[in-house]
Image 1 (tube, rainbow, N blue to C red):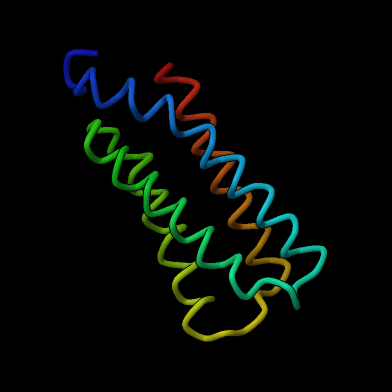
Image 2 (image 1 turned 120 degrees about the horizontal axis):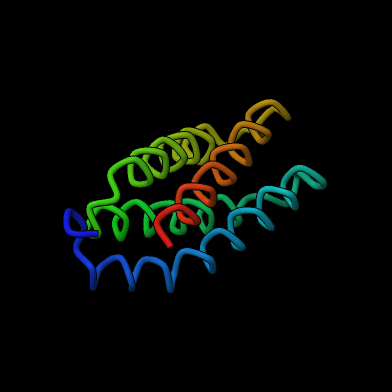
Length: 107
């Protein structure tokens, strides 16, 4: 783990699961009831932003890059104010699953 910032990795691992839960639950809620997603997108964006930042500080560049793409997509959804198609939501859930797998490898 020498190439990583060990303290930042520990911090990242401690908070990552909470953000994954927020993202998964929020995306599934959005999928079930797209009309009620107005404030939810902001919450999901903040979780993706926090994951990106803490992964970056820990020098977990792949996780940070995936979180950045997730954040970018949520920003577009928020700015357009449109309900995302099911394929977009599936892609976002896929990204969360991949990040979880990457975190499991780091842990």
